[in-house]
Amino acid sequence: MDYTNPIDIIALVVAIIILAKGVSLLFVTASQWKNLARTVRRNARTLMGVYALIALAVGYYVFMLLRVEEVAAVMLFTSAMMKMVMMMYPESTAMMIEEARNKHYLPIVILAVLFALWILLDLFG
Image (cartoon, rainbow, N blue to C red; front, side, top):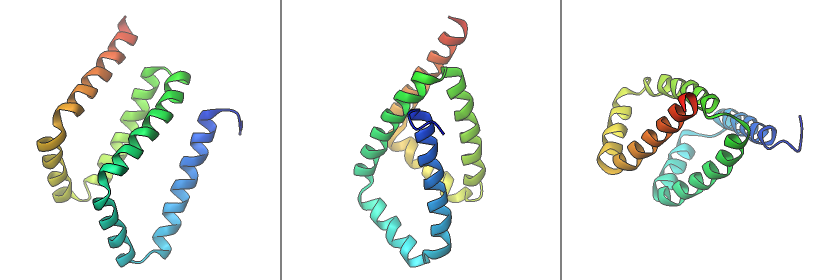
């Protein structure tokens, strides 16, 4: 591992988070998970801001070191993995999609179209 490479550091953080989540599944009770879910719901806007800052910081390094086509391929892989898990809960997924469409549809579409255009420009421009 190169401790000066931001991507290696990001990968290390991801691995630690995954392991911590896996271990927590063994030791955290159902009522503790419910308490966590309530806390997340109460602080959703704050967490959205935190995740936006994380996305900006990680995105800066990712897009500095990788081509947009490589990022798009990784996004497709990640999306397929997430969808596979979401299909285990079809009713919850359908409700989440409907709520997102009713509340936050336009910004998501704008960002997706801009990203697609960036990919096309990089591929054919």
